[in-house]
Image (cartoon, rainbow, N blue to C red; front, side, top):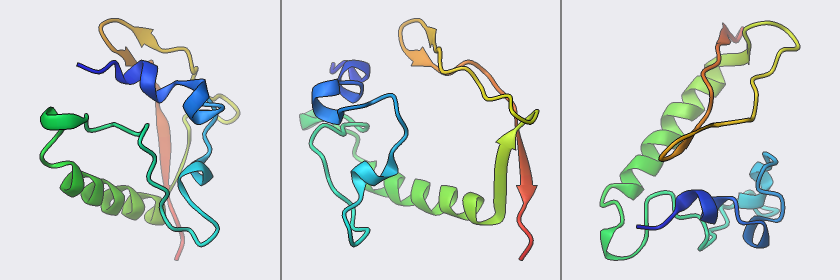
Length: 104
């Protein structure tokens, strides 16, 4: 099993893995840059069989949500902590958001 946490937070591969920068995956023409270090669905013989379908579905679902709603913290100027709950895996601490319907 590959330790995804160590691969996806590797500074030699990502430079600044703790900073949200979607542009690291897009070139000047907004085409997707495929990085070998991005192994969210595993690697080798035991990788996820549905990775292509899952990626397409996630793109469509999240794209539709972002198109129709604006997501804000529950309280203004109160962002969730970036310190994770650590156990067998790292997970974000629970937090609440407001989804405000965009006016069309």
